[in-house]
Each structure stands twice: as structure tokens, then as C-alpha cells.
Length: 262
Image 1 (tube, rainbow, N blue to C red):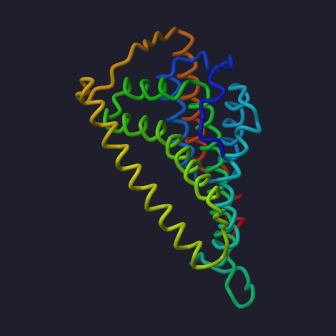
Image 2: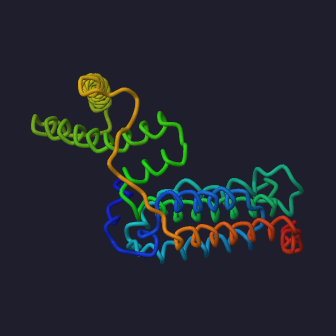
Image 3: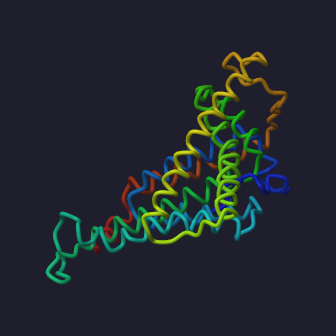
């Protein structure tokens, strides 16, 4: 799974030319509403829209696939767990354990919505530089502290990983070989402890350096946004389509399909 989500932010696309503030706001509303959907057909519509956004973003599929696979690794087990643990009426038994179709339906809709959210997140943050997206969040009145925490977390994830690699190389250069034994567990425990101590010390140094340069809690920037009428049209269209999805889900034209799961 790629950590540098803005790796392809330089690629020209329909979404990269969109004002980041309106893009985050409208697609954020879409993500929130998709998470509330309760029927599989409507959730599949949301998934199709998310795939449409991904196509408009022109992000490489190989780049996005890592994030999707990472999510599926955690969610696929729900297909086996939910039907056997759902407290509703059981259709039959598997090895003496009640199997409920409603549990399977819930597991499927969770997976569909989660993948849709991940794909849309790539479309939002993969088409603009991460720092620009964070500044856009700040313009949308997101708490400054939260924005700066996200910025520093994103920045120092890579420093943290580089530190891990240096320590790992140093250990292997001294003859350390990983194995399934107490020596390995002890050394890996020391490895993690040392890494945390170094990270804490680096945090203090960075904070003191920021204070010495006049940091007062604000995040100064030279980035300016200039929304054009087309940007507002895109945002309105996304919000209208999102409202339509929610209305279809609430009015219940797919209720017979949901009842067929029982």
C-alpha cells in the first residue's frame, strides 16, 4: 500500500483541475452518504460512481490497487463471520452454527461501501499535493490542530520508515538474523523501544526548531485558491447525485430485494 498518496498529483485530469476546497467538500459529502446506505443495489451504484471518479482522476490502477487490497484483507473475513454470528433468524446450520442470510447481506454491503470510500479517498487526495489538500481543509474551517497533526503525521511517517531501515541495516551488518526464538523477540523488542525513544527525541527537536522560527500555532502558506464557475458546477452535480442516491435508498424501491435475503 503506497503511503505517498499524492505521488501522481502532477497528472493532469478532470479532478486535478478542480478547486481542492470544493473537491474535498463535495466528494466528502459523497463519502459520508455512501457510508450510510443500507441496500446493496444502491451501494453498488455508489461503487460505480466511485469508480467513475477514479477514472476521471487518471490515477494508475496499480497505485490504487494496493489500498483496496489492504482494506479487503481485513474485511473479507466478515463474509464468514457475520452470517454465523448475526443474531437474526437462521436459514440453516453450518456445523451446528446458525447461518443467517441477513448477516451475509450486511457483510457484503460493508465491503462494498468500504471499497467505495477508499477509491473516492484516492480520487480526492491523489489528485492534489497533500499539503495543498490540508490547506484546503483549513480553508473549510477544519480545526487547525487537526490539520497540522495530519500534516506532521504524513511528513514524519517517511522519516520514521527511513529510521527503521537504517536500524535494520545496522543490525544485519552486525550479523543479526531473524528467527522464531527468544533472542529474536528480545532484540526486536529493543528495536521497537529504541525506535520510539528516537522518535520522541526527534519530536522534541523539531518542536523546538519550529518555536525558534516563530511558530505560534498557525500554518502560514503562500498557496492561494481561485474557484471558477465550472468548479461550483462540478460540486453541485456531485451533491445532487449523492442526494439522489440517499433518496433512492430511503424510499425503499429495493426493499423486496433486501427481504429476499431472509
